[in-house]
Image (cartoon, rainbow over all chains, first blue to last red; front, side):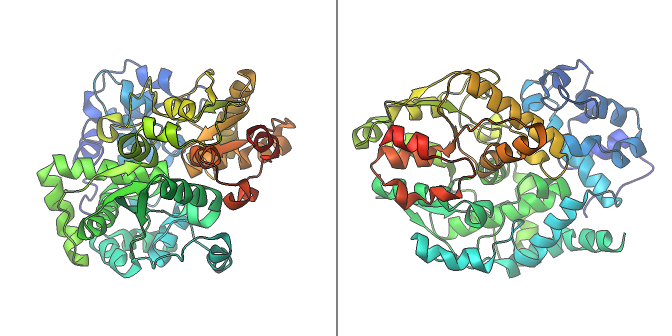
Amino acid sequence: MEHETVTSLAFSDVVASRLGGETVTLCYQCGTCASSCPVAKITERFNPREVIKLSLLGEKQEVISGDAIWLCCSCYNCQERCPQKVEIADVIYALRNIALNEGYIPNIYSEFASSLLNDGRIVGISKFVENKRPTLGLPPLQPTGVDALRKILFATGFDKLQKQEETS
Amino acid sequence: MTSYALFLGCTIPARQPNYELSARKSLSKLGIELVDLANMTCCAPPPVQSIDLETSLAVAAYNICLAEEADLNIITLCSGCFESLAMTNAMLKADEKLKVRINRILSQAGKEFLGNKEVKHFLQVLTDDVGLKRLKQSVSKPLSNIKVAAFYGCHALRPSELLKLDDPERPAILENLIETLGAKSVEYKNKLKCCGGLLRGISDDLALNLAREKLVNTTKAGADCIATLCPFCFVALDLGQLQIRSKFKEEFNMPVLHYSELLSLALGIGPKELALEAHKVKTDKIISKII
């Protein structure tokens, strides 16, 4: 990873130094995000304003080890409406990236990661489905550029994230 | 003839021949040629962005490079693919430093992102390249008997600053396309709210709760069907109805059709050619209303 977590920095600075996290410190806690959030409307387990607040307060462990950051549905409503132009959905991606780097990852994301490395797709296509294509009148599937993709994943360290998950 | 590189993604070829067939057949009838390029991969959608944003930008950019090499703009059918590719395209075109950073990674795979191509959603190709006027003239079976609830989902519209498909709070592109086919587009409560698709597998309860709200509101509005643009929204609302039935003992029987399927039917393509059996909620009733 290009961004190792630097413990000497305040957590908000760590978040702000990552792709997606740049705008986190602009938040003034107005709550427009929380009132625009479809998930916050139906559960107390996720509230975007809280996630940002805890990040700004330096509550790193609570943020990255909790399940809240994984309950964002990535609808971008909050981001569209934020008067401070905090890119909230992207900040949550940055927080997930940090969490994952430190070994916190929901199972389904592990599956996505290994599918991507092995097949070049996050949803596999079975031979049965592939063989059925001509009978439906669909053209054959083109080969996936999995070799080129792996070179990219090695260059960004994605494969190391994968190994870390497997041993954790 | 206008040609596009078709970015098919993963979910559509894996599970939704109904989407792929209807999109291919309708576009071909409207004079849009689709080119299937070799070596495309996953688009790097939100699950990959969640794992590592830098990787997701590099993977999306790699796929755009393939279209650049073939000198073609990209068309996507899936809103997840649209979001990741169009967002990456816009970000790298606007930010030279980011482009250099991603190109350093791409050089390992012998690629360089130039930024000279467009990424378009299926809907944009219909409005920009075919145009509503010509589309209307091509309709041979107007859908005059049916009321359709337009469902945008999230990633065709947002983040709007980068995607620029339509106004994120008051979009009209899909409603206009529905009415062009002769159908009535019906309004319903919380139309622009998420289907919950990305929470499936993370928290199925929350995901089904969000999908259920769509079904309640579109039923109340008297819709004959919901029109979707994205395979994830389709799964959330179509397969989702079976899960809602077993979990909440509630039955909606609301057909969910991709806009491309409605379009194909209106263009006179027979329902037998469209693999409608891929739908979990039966489409017979709505098909009989159309034909």
